[in-house]
Length: 204
Image (cartoon, rainbow, N blue to C red; front, side, top):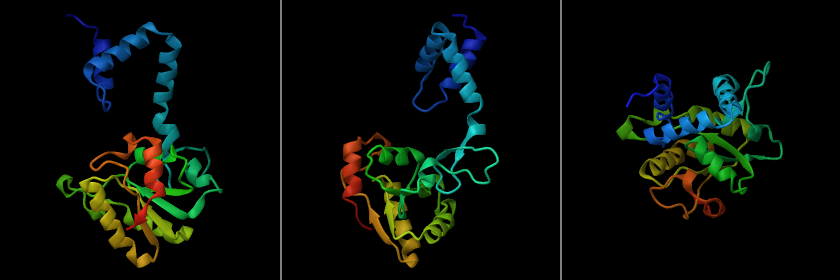
C-alpha cells in the first residue's frame, strides 16, 4: 500500500509518545485530517511553543509557565502563599505530584526528584538532586518531609536513601501509607486511594 510520506512522518512522530503505538498514531492523524482544521492548527501552535513557555519550576521541579522578564520560573503551587511551606512532599516524577494534587489532601508544597534510585539503570545517589532538596528544606524551614515515592523496589530504595541523607537535618520524615499497590505507579492510583495513603502516612 502506497502511503503519503507526510502521513508516515506524522504517524512515526506520534508513535514515539509513551503508550501510543503505530495504529493509535494513525487513528490520531486520520482524525485530525477529517476534523475541524482549527484543531490541528491550535494543536500545532501549542506544540511549537511548548519548550518556550513551559519549563520545570526552579524551586520544586513541577511544570511552570515562563513569565517574561521574571528572573525565576515558579509554578502555581510554589507561588501559593496559603500552602504550608513547612510541609514538603517529595515525589519521583511530576506525574506523581499531579496524582497527589488530585486528592486535594496535600496542604504543603512539593519537591520533584525527577528520577528514582536505580542501580540497574545506572542511577545512583549522585544523580539525584539531594543537595538542592536539603537547601530547600533549610530555606523554607521545613519540619516534615513526606516521602511519596512509589511502593516499588526503586521507590523503596529511594525512600531509604532520603531517610539516611536527610537525617542530619532533624526534620520529621514520614512515608505514605498502604493503599497504593506494591509495584504500582502513583499516577494510576485513584484519588480516594491516594488520599487515604497520604492521610495515613507513617514515620519513615
